[in-house]
Amino acid sequence: MTGDGATDDRWFDDAAGPVVRPYAMTRGRTRSAAEDKLDLIAVVVADRVTPGSAADQTLSPEHIDIVELSRDTPQSVAELAAELDLPVGVVRVLIGDLLHAALVRVSRPVPPAELPDERILREVINGLRAL
Amino acid sequence: MVYGHSDPGRSHIIEPVTLKILVAGGFGAGKTTLVGAVSEIKPLRTEELLTEAGRPVDNIAGVEGKKTTTVAMDFGRITLREDLVLYLFGTPGQDRFWFLWDELATGALGAVVLADTRRLEDCFAAVDYFERRGIAFTVAVNCFEGADNYPEESVREALDLDPGTPVVMCDARERESVKRVLISVVEHAMLATAATS
View 1 (cartoon, chains in turn purple, orange):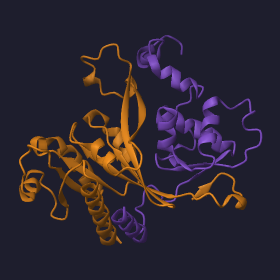
View 2 (cartoon, one colour):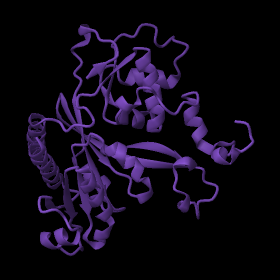
View 3 (cartoon, helix red, strand yellow):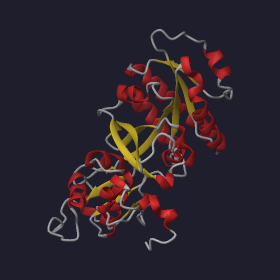
View 4 (cartoon, chains in turn purple, orange):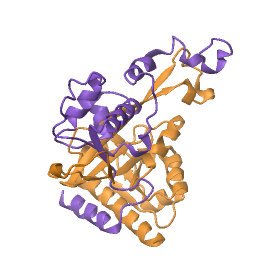
């Protein structure tokens, strides 16, 4: 930022407030290359054994939390965000890092632009009736 | 679709198929109550940070000095089977957060528009939104105690609904009642799928 012609980015000056803290965890990144795959209900699974992940100096405590949380129980992006009490945008960037490092996998069974097929819808109806 | 590296040795972890249904409606219509009535977890909250960049300029009056806003979305989870999980997302009520709806609506199985007959106009925008995007929705009329019991026909007329759109009377606090609403959404989505294929 030059300070000149700063009218457009004035919102991001030192008074920008709490936005700075969460995105400090992402080192200022607000987008992830993987974010189109990281729908709120995309499921994140960590490998059961991720050798050395805890000792990996490039990982933040939040990265490690995500790996730990999704180790045995697959977690949706929304659940991880709620559990870590972080904005969804921040969690997406962190998951993107872990994907890149092959420490987690993300499954997205139903492509976001399509409705699930009739068989799955029928199973949902049966499941709801049986609740 | 699975990506990232894979290893057949981990196949015992079941990765569920996840689906979502949105719950829209005006402020105080009972969205979180409805989610809580069927969710197996206490409704959780996710937040999205907004900055000045994302805020319409005409809304700054009265919030001078506030640079960021947090939009909360409450959600619940229903595990239908070990490998089939349904999430319910309450949509942010305020009109200025419509852009967040697009993300929520992407890939949604369908939606519930929760209507309070005392403030029916509060759900006009949601009805319009789902109609425009071709998302299957059911109007659930939350029968609050003390609220007049409107006949289905007058609700349908007041909201100018398409003839195929289901209208269900419900009590957002009652699990069985909410189950019926959700089943109606999925049945409607199924008809919509059949009609387009």
